[in-house]
Amino acid sequence: MPTAVTPGPSVAPPPLPPASAAVPPTQGHAKKARPDAEPATAPAAGTDAADGSPPAASQPRPSFGSRRLVDKAAVWENNAWDHVTWEAEEEAAARAVVAQQAQAAVPAGRQAELEQTAADQWNAFYGRNGVNFFKDRQWLANEFPEIFDSDAAPAGQAASDAAPPIVTKRILEIGCGVGNTIFPILERNQDPGLHVYATDYSATAISLLKEHALYKPSRCTACVFDVTSPDIPPCLKPGSMDIIICIFVLSAISPATWPQAAANIQALLKPGGLLLFRDYGRHDLAQLRFKKDRYLAENFYVRGDNTRVYFFTQDEIAAMFPGWEVMQNDYDRRLIVNRKRAITMHRNWLQTKLRKPR
Ligand SMILES: C[S@@+](CC[C@H](N)C(=O)[O-])C[C@H]1O[C@@H](n2cnc3c(N)ncnc32)[C@H](O)[C@@H]1O
Image (cartoon, rainbow, N blue to C red; front, side, top):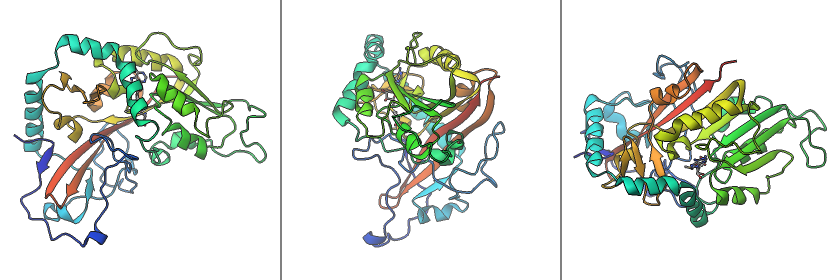
């Protein structure tokens, strides 16, 4: 039975280069890489707009990587390939793996417990890992330039604690963790009118984030917010956000709670505001390598540390926001090559930009 680690094409890999010349691995988080984590490099920079095979609803986009596997015999020549299409057999094998996983679903009582203790599980996660788990999202400017389109601070108006500037742009991150997205934003976007709202369900994550040297209340407000709850905390004003960022957070909540999460996002964004989303795509390696007793519901799993993860399709994320303008809704599919073990692995992420109607 195939797993996520699919055998490579039936072409023998060439001899390995000397160790000193070996290509560094593509995956990795700061210190303790969780096997299902997104590569720190993702998305790769590139200029491959020409035949990026974006879905019909999307605009051509140059940002995803440019390493194209045209000749399958050349698969071992790179450590990763971009925009990889799946063969029908690979799709079928992935579906078979998922069907097998579904045979051993987590009992309903345990599932309810995981839902009730979700914040505790994430608090425990950050209690164990502190700020060392996720890597700063340095790809933001490449993939989400809208975040930075007001970064010119007029001379003498650099943001400071002394004189809080008039806020002209509000960005909210939901599920911010310890700030691996918001601090690169605050560092790079020096617009004195920018204010960033950093929210997470985990109180432990929020207190770690507040200890960061770049956390300045004149530029940033951090508070606990459960995106699945109908209660919006007082730190967030409905209808005020220009941009909401959700990076690997909607995958952490139960599909049953998506309608409430979507309603909150809708309520918090201004008319014409943008939702920027990046998360796990359907049949990513991380999904297919879940073993027995991790299956909660269709495409929803519990990890060994009791946090949960969902694997999205393009249609699902678009359907959460009916009537919104779809500015981008693309898979970022990569084939990761391990020449030493002569295997290839499919990674699949989803990147979406939606505009709330004006
Ligand atoms: C995989 S981490 C991603 C963290 C961060 N966005 C990043 O990419 O580095 C998922 C985050 O979502 C948060 N989270 C989980 N459930 C949530 C909820 N119901 N409301 C808000 N945040 C939640 C977790 O505490 C955790 O910080």
